Length: 429
Image 1 (cartoon, rainbow, N blue to C red):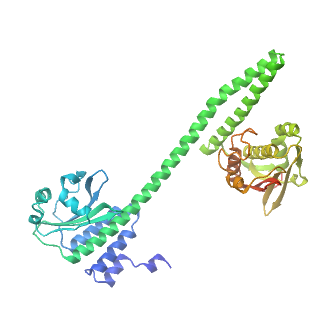
Image 2 (image 1 turned 180 degrees about the vertical axis):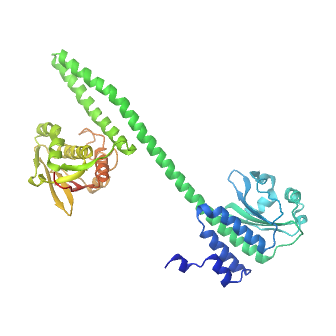
Image 3 (image 1 turned 120 degrees about the horizontal axis):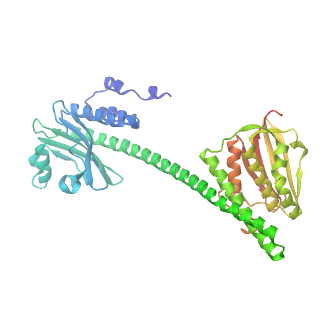
């Protein structure tokens, strides 16, 4: 049902109901408050104060907010024509200076003083403060949220002394409840926005740190690898050569990790300009696995490319697709059985290509599958068995999704693991 049909407008309520009957006053004003947006809320609260003030023949109506630091301030105020506003005067006053009235409010008790003399002797500070402002009678109805005094609605008369009726106290109390609810709602939404903004700032700071760290590490790593190559040319000692091999192996492993971090940082910060274009799938795979063939050979692993790969052209970013393919094939080689097979094949359905990279290794347990795409998660039972920092799958899934595709894992313990990449198909070139 449309909102307009379900909830009458405030003007309609005035026509349908008695504007002075307490329940109808509460319904109309509460509706105004609830239907206000955050941007409209302050103006609506003042309008509600005006409506209540005119209805009860008050000279001033206000909202007092109590802060956790032990101070209170008037946040909203309405004054009858010719009455001076004191909203700016009542700002960050100490609750300890007015212990009697604040104590009443904290206990949820209404202050209904038809004459200021009723405040004496306990409310001497309150008496003097109201007298200074020319007030003759006071009504203050508090509202607590989660056991803490949140705010109150106050009425003042300056022309004469008058005790406020029970109906007035009932109406003001109900409206105080409604105002406390909508203010709490606005505060919650602001807290959520602030938390989200803080998380986004933290994420940007993390990406910037990773990018700076990667740049700083890459320079000395290139120097280390360069000097290791020079040392290799100048030595014939077997022991020295073995040491240089370890330097180069460790240096290249660390350089690969740094390059991956830098790449993730570029994509996250938007520095990488993604270019989606038609890419022949078999060509992309063959190029991605060139450097992996030697690793596969040392493990006795055969790379088998299915015939259906030929003729498939996907729409992808060449750099991202290369990273994804390199990572998935590398994982299949590392975590499959030595002497086994890694199979790559694809089929096209409804304009989507499903590329499968399958090993015949030990597979993954359901718990491992659930954790697979977490950052810095290693899925091998022996955490030191294979090099890597556990960011490859996270990065690969992110890249696949940014290219309009997806990446998932399928595995049965003891039967191997299959990575399934889905990408949009392009027209063959």
